[in-house]
Length: 439
Ligand SMILES: [Zn+2]
Image (cartoon, rainbow, N blue to C red; front, side):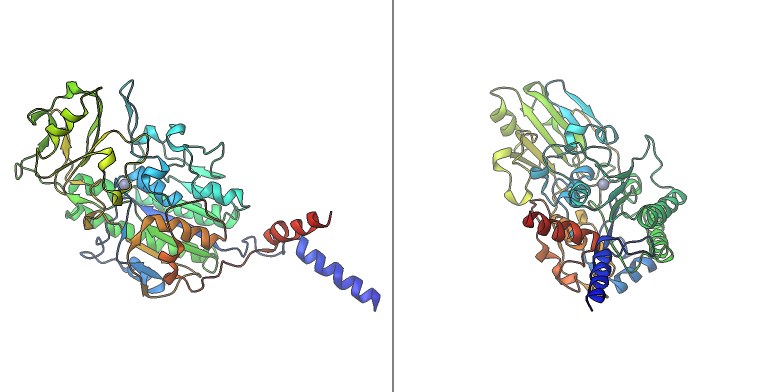
């Protein structure tokens, strides 16, 4: 009898200590976060999107989600990765700038300015890795940087002058993430970024036939992605979230309206400024010279019926865009349809984003499918700060302090319990403390 008990105990010990043999993919709950840049919430209304419709039937859909303000790419993506409003994560603009030297770097170059991204908040890749999971990121804004010396374990940053619209490359990237990263490397979390339909929306406008064609391409890619998950044996483990960073709205052109051009405003002079960040869609920030703040502010306030002018300390708190040293003392934004020009108009996009996040045109879409999600459920709209705690919950990790709440997305989950923890992680989280406690 003693012999039988000994053998039984040995078998139990082995089954706890050694990962279960068999398929390479672990039984842990995995998460894929996909962003299609600038996919407005209603882009599926004027075009057939069979694959997005199927994803909604098989999972969860929100009519729209509300991005953080300002509604531009790097800041709103970093909100999704950290669960923080922009004033709290510090990536306040697509462009790195230095008010002393007046140097500015455009979007792509700013991806490589480490201190711009690594300023106190860590994205979910790092949080996951610190808790024993494995993370990857493909082209997602923020991927090129390191955070407190760490980066996503597997990552790919697009080259300069990358063609963000190539459908063949999209499919190759899907195959890479599903087949190599999730199945072979057994990653737990991957973020994946596509630069469309943003580029097409800017160039041709959100109501153009070109945008409609690009939405068809996005839809085909969603179908390809879900097929790829199935053919790689991931369907039972993988939760897929597809969303975007912001929407898009038409810019009024051809002399239809009185444009906003700061140099033409009486009483305003660029000579009163140390630094300015304008000619970047509908938002702007100004740093007046010593003693000139009131003059600059008074000249601009009320100067154009569609220009909003705020001192930093008076910013509406709902926008969460004030409480950060990087935000300059005067903040400007325009109403939909208008952009803010500096000396003279230099912006000729037919579509823009960056506007107030209350504007419906700035809201992105949201779909989620996978073993954790209800099927055929439409949930209430929510803010994108809440995606981060949702993803942490799906991965079974403890989130960093953030501005979101799991309660905002809990209705879409089949169970409010954290996902099953694997044997390997049980050993680390339960058995080791027990051993240490006995020493
Ligand atoms: Zn964007």
